[in-house]
Length: 267
Image 1: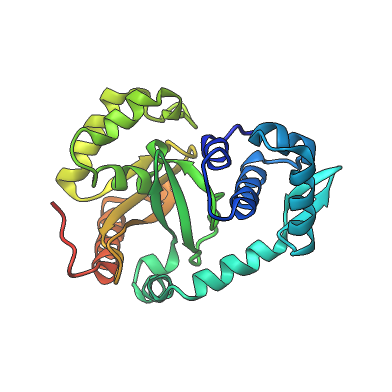
Image 2 (image 1 turned 90 degrees about the vertical axis):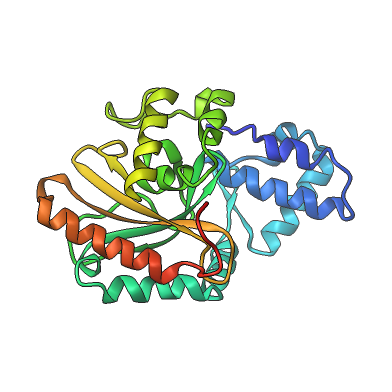
């Protein structure tokens, strides 16, 4: 499916100190979101750029390894994975996330994710795979509708009351339903966010994948940063007993406390 990204359309229409760099960034963003290879003419059409300069930029990105040729078009190249790896390796807090997951008595055996909120999506920064056989589809760099995920709802609950609901009223298409149990309307979402604020964690109860339940706790201020993240634990619902649930939540709260920036407090 081709993506007509608002960001890309805007970024090339504005005045930039180095327009070619802005165009290259827009091209990479568009190709990344498209889910399929795009030809330079299609890229130019979607971004409203001249065909000749678009083709030249694509060739430069190809030479740099940021794009590859595939199916008569361009897809993202491996160089971006390398750069992403360098970025992730420089983030001490992410390394600490993995270390803490491995050290916690219950969470060390389970599947966990760490994510940030981006508009009405969650973006996954890291994943920890425990010793259980469950394997999740959410990988590093993937986006999921925030309204369907525990991490998303935990982060939406951190927003000033009413702001999350307003985001979905302004963009009703963002209220995605991945399973029959996904949130169906803003009113239902509002109740779930109120509950998350009350108990301190959010739940994805088969809203992303049937048979799978996920719990998430928000971290207001990620170590040395003021940004917020959420950490989660995901298990097969059939394994969930009251005792296991409480032990899992205890580890999640411990993980969130260990990662939080002590200078940032929840309002």
